Length: 196
Image (tube, rainbow, N blue to C red; front, side, top):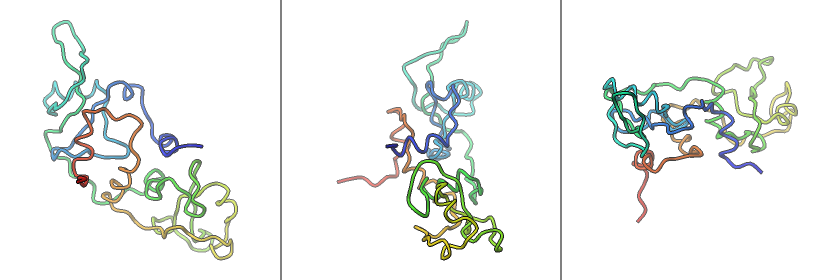
């Protein structure tokens, strides 16, 4: 049986440089640029940005890199010097659609391999919009075919909606990456409710 982490990591590309000592990138307000995928830079990009004074390094790994004249500790958390304004609308992409639907088939609740389905088929006037497309597993997609929900005997688990970027960020926080360095934790969950 797969865990949530197994299912979601297939949708995220992880370049080789990201796996070895990545730096968490925070906006100038000390919030991550994104939660899912988590805003990470390869250590090489973080070192370059620090050298060019584009970021402030606020946490470091215990490892160093050396050039002939300089020794630098690898940054683990960096803060952008200039604030990057968040997007006002969420891009309508396959990944964002799966994220909105929490990587779950909206007909049967299955997790794993997903595709998408037009609730009202395009042949019947359905459009490719946030409000008419849902994440769907291949068996349910095949079962529904070119029919309406009623004709196929299917029921939506949740009505499709147009998410705003904040909603996608909140959903993304439910799917933490497989590796969280201890120096990142205070910046990932700083606005979470404290337990008494």
